[in-house]
Image (cartoon, rainbow, N blue to C red; front, side, top):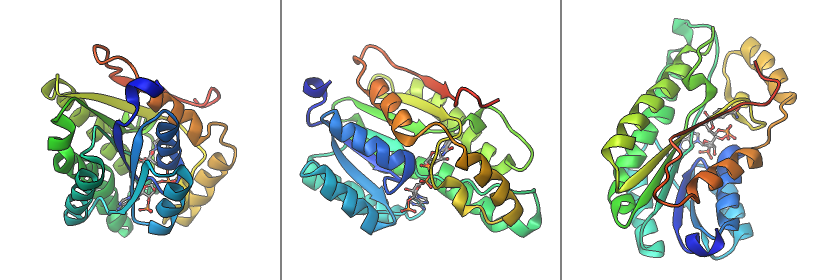
Length: 242
Ligand code: NDP
């Protein structure tokens, strides 16, 4: 993979922790140049320093379109544009459906769904120019819904429908791949605002067996297939997850 992908440029949102950070690391190892986007600049700068000259840290908030436009300009100037966009930034604010949590609902839709849509339209010209790849990080929750995850599931079901539409529409310029992980050991549950739900979910995450590099490896595999082959969708769970 090193030779065929050498120098391809991948933009990863939410690259400051978890799956995004591991994916950036995996792509750098496979010869990609990587632009790391997130709000926590200290984290992405440390990761970029670790990855070396082919990595660039850019502070961007996926709910702030201006920051994404500025990020796209920097990627254009420093790397000549993006070949791959990985929409990974997300929050999972689980809890009982209640008017107390209306802020959580807006935030999940703005980050997980609208954030991915906005990042993609901002980078679309760069991706189209020369044959690009779009990877959307959905979830098992994009195919199954449970009590207390309704709005989170809605954002991920939304990503799935939008991805399937783009898969058809953007061919042959951009390949579209959807990744749907089950429980992965990350910071994701720490942001849950409903205390009792956070405790229960955190217990499940404390016992997590799948680590971010497991997911990164799958993403790198999908991206390094020859261009006549598109891996449309990958649903993956820890073997003991129901
Ligand atoms: P983390 O909490 O470790 O990572 C989330 C990332 O999203 C962080 O890098 C964070 O960066 C970024 N982010 C959050 N809000 C914004 C924002 N407004 N603008 C830009 N970046 C933002 O969790 P994961 O690695 O687990 O999550 C990554 C993706 O994987 C999410 O979409 C999640 O839904 C999905 N997923 C995770 C699963 C799991 O079990 N862990 C299972 C299935 C899917 P910062 O705060 O620095 O901005």
